[in-house]
Length: 467
Ligand code: NAD
Image: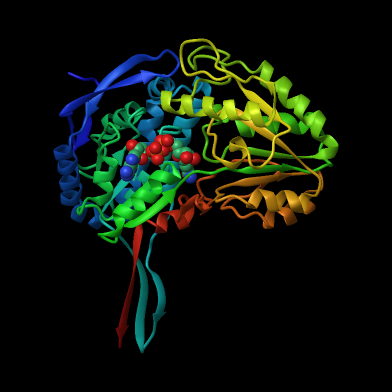
């Protein structure tokens, strides 16, 4: 009997197989959970299709109440969910608490949105309304960096619009999703939300499944392309929230002492495993040395350890594959630049990497050109701000970006020229539920959150009547 079961058609069920989930801080098994077979995925899709007519016909006010009840249930279980999140994902407990609380807040936010028909004409000649209809069954595919929060980007919007869902977490972080299924089991009608776990083998099956009408995917660009290809046959709707290589540009008028900790935080949050982490730091030549020194001091003082230990500021990389990938980035960074803090593995157990600062590095190095998704920050020197923006834009990615300056008007003008879905001034990675979030270029298609995000879970229908 496994403690963590699948949620299919309103029932918690054992998987046809099992999956060991490791704690990345200890490399020991946290729990063995249920793993779904293809037949169980089919059952979940059937259940979601069977639940769709009643759920989509449920008045929106009733659906709102369900979202609020889910938000309450997440909040009531915040301690358990947060501790479990630390154990499977690795992040510090305080960050995990923030993530779980944020997820409940996002459910609450979506419960306030409206999808009433827009009346375009209603006179003696015609009645015309633009309506937003649900799509059907939505597959929500989640990565391992924010397993709880990213469910809350998708599930409440899909449900409010009247869709039913299949949630598929990443194979290295399925426990919080399965726990979420357990928590909401009696809140949503059977089949409206189904949660399955896999060993990286069912994502493709879900994206090509004929019973699924939309895929809401967050993950790497490489997998996003596969999702797009396999959704093509059935002309499935897709939203793709993919990788990023955010540039952060610091102008010459900032106070380095005051700015450095904020920039450092933007690069190192969640051990750098944030799609919108600052991944390329451009600093003006006049303050370059001073900023690099500040970053190095911050890196050396950062407390790295098990997320459940009090005082931990940074946890391990989430999984072995990512750990090895980032170690590979370190090897090339050592050749292409000068490592002034960190530079290696921390300890010999767990996937810990020292917070690392690399200076005297430029484009052409893997650490600058590719998404490192780890606690290794390249600091790049520039002399002309417009040229820095040009270099920032010379990337296939376009997720986020930021400009830091005392002269915020100047920064604003530069921000307008950045080719990315979100651009911040004097802050980075500020996501709010009412602001649409999405990527340009290889960072994605479509957006999530806000009213725009909600609409992506709907089909437009124009009702047009002659009188
Ligand atoms: P990944 O692409 O390896 O996996 C993401 C999910 O896709 C997992 O659930 C996985 O099991 C599933 N999957 C695997 N193969 C599939 C297939 N063929 N079809 C459908 N699904 C499949 O990504 P990851 O390594 O888990 O996550 C890290 C990446 O996610 C980074 O590139 C990061 O930038 C990106 N990310 C983007 C955002 C965003 O909002 N833009 C947010 C978080 C993470």
